[in-house]
Image (cartoon, rainbow, N blue to C red):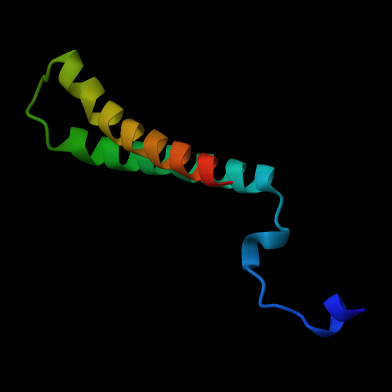
Length: 75
């Protein structure tokens, strides 16, 4: 009964399933990767090399993966 009367402050995310957090985080990461990559690609000169164009999306994707990996290690 003590655990009912002495409630500790709880995090908002404590009762949310980890799988749901993973899905929402992955969706957000994909959206941000496309947003940042398209922004970078829009400032490229006309007719860029395919490697430069791919790098516009690969760099933000690498950052998003590093963030995802760090969070996955903490969950």
